[in-house]
Amino acid sequence: MKAAWLATTAMLTAAAIGSTASYAEDVVNVYTSRHYQTDEALYDNFTKETGIKVNLIEGKGAALIERIKSEGANSPADVLITVDAGNLWRAEQKDVFQSVSSEKLDANIPENLRHPDQKWYGLSTRARMIFFDKAKIKDGEITSYEDLADPKWKGKVCIRKSSNIYNQSLLASIIEAKGEEAAEKWASDVVANFARQPVKGDTNQLRGIGSGECEIAVANSYYFVRLLTKPSDKDKGLADKLGYVFPNQSDRGTHVNISGAGVVKSAPNKEAAVKFLEYLTSEQAQSYFADGNNEFPVVSGVAPNSAVKGLGDFKVDTVNVSVYGKNQVTAQKIFDRVGWK
Image (tube, rainbow, N blue to C red; front, side, top):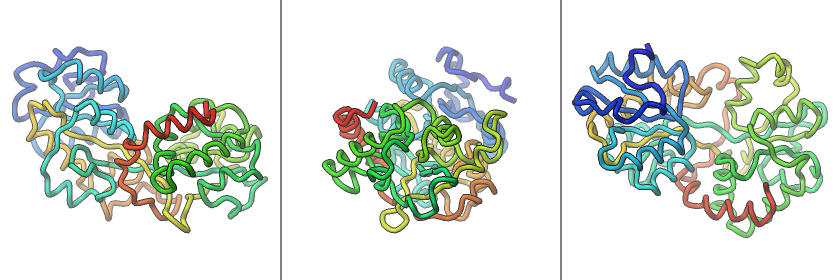
């Protein structure tokens, strides 16, 4: 199926989808940092339902944003899909998106998971969870992000680098909830509790628990689900060693982030682009979209897959995810000041 698409990777030039057909009403050109097998069925079903062909360019989020900017007003891009509200904010700051008017999108997507001016929309969510060594830490000993800063956990915490967008967004949410001063103290105290200097990858934080290098780790929910359902040979049995908590259930709720999309400002096929986003909020599409990365659907009433559902219900922090971008620069400055590498 993928071979039938006009463009499949970001290595192809814009000219590859710059034909007359790309500017017709029966085409939508999608630039995406997602690349899951379930997406193939997702796009194919959209074409079957609407007659609109999906032309695809895949690449990393930052590279796609820069590509759209370099292509300028003649960019064939209609839709940009990427992960993390922080990345969507970066695209917004580069004037990539336009506001769209859609009663269906506004009705289907919760207000806290979409841009206040309809420039982008969350399409699935993931939770930033805390994991711990079940053999060394009891249930209930850690209940919040704030607990990561407790001196009792000195030398026991594994977490990613400060340059990681997931951590930037988490700190941005703490800035919004607690203020800059309190957020900086939290970050400084977490650094004091590091078991090691931060390394790349959420899975590597969980492996740190398995190896005994740390007792506590922070990771997105879908990394854990992968360990549960499709562990690599070296990770078999790791999930059984891990306890987990959805943080801050007694106050603001667990920090969640999104995979999301917006209509590009210069979109040559705007009507098709809006139809595509609306389709992604349908029950069938929500299942495909969320399942691709073991995430939670955003549309009320659509259930996650059984492995994700098995994590349990939890209270979500309902702050508008756009604040993750708004506070991103401040978050990075705090990381730099406290020595979070």
